[in-house]
Length: 189
Ligand code: GRF
Image (cartoon, rainbow, N blue to C red; front, side):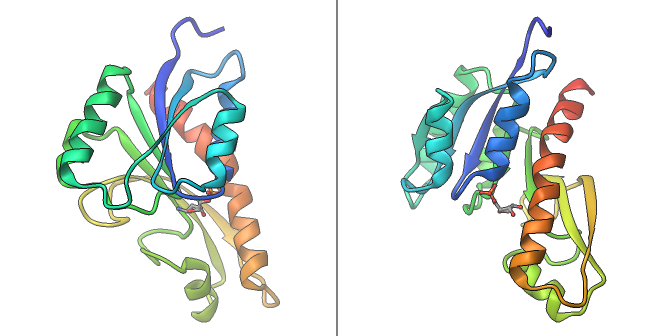
């Protein structure tokens, strides 16, 4: 059993499969982190239900998420002793101002093999370009979208008969496995 678990927050906008994977892992006695806060910019995000079922405090941030609000949020997180922030399908850009409060402590999971296919519709673009592989990448969040230092990647084969849905499912399965492992490793390092 780990005596002191590291507090983390997870930022979401949607269904929350990565959040769920992070929560499941955090329940293991030997896991070194604890999710104490889930932030969503969408009040209907499915992940909020998962957080509530697991008795994790949630917070909805406004759709505009102005600089002042980011400052307020940073202070709340600091007061809660949050050491790492995991973005998991969070569809808002965090300002450099916010990032500065958590230097090298905010990570993101992206559904492509970065630096290829930054931004949206990654699977569609990978299929259209007839790539043989896609995958997911975990990286530090920096000022430039999907461009921070890469922490880990997992390659996934693209098959000739793949559809968008099939590829997304295959990559997501790997995302859900990789994210908790990387968070634990990062905290240990
Ligand atoms: C994942 O594919 C993640 O890589 C991307 O958004 C999706 C979020 O999925 N950034 P979920 O909400 O964790 O299920």
